[in-house]
Length: 149
Image (cartoon, rainbow, N blue to C red; front, side):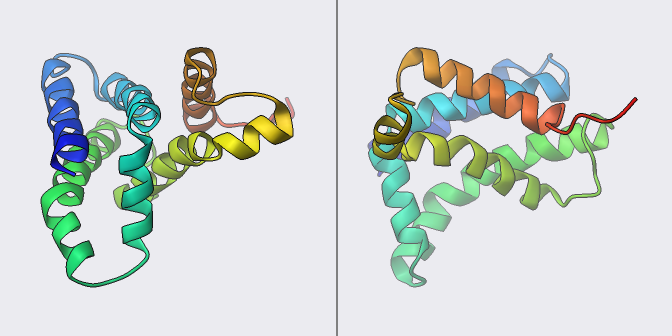
């Protein structure tokens, strides 16, 4: 876990620090792109996190303390900054926004075998990963509803 999740959290925290001069929405969008890349690069970490999150107990508490709290402190901070700046809605609690983003990022990638069988696409290929990041960002920040004019 330390090699996979610990290194990932440090990388994300450093990335956020490097982007300190960027506006809050750009930092959040960049975080989403990098998060998708990490899901592709470290699928075993995310499978383990998913599996361990299903069962309460000491193992989950340890994972929360060691990895989830630092990860979500960074992630939640990005969402809250964008909310405070009026760049995204503050009507949805930041923790809920984080979970919406995580689900949108993770599910497509974790469905690799299903996506290959159903659609003959590999969501972990560089092209599909980049396309997925673009679609997640567009859907989350622009919406998918076409409004009548």
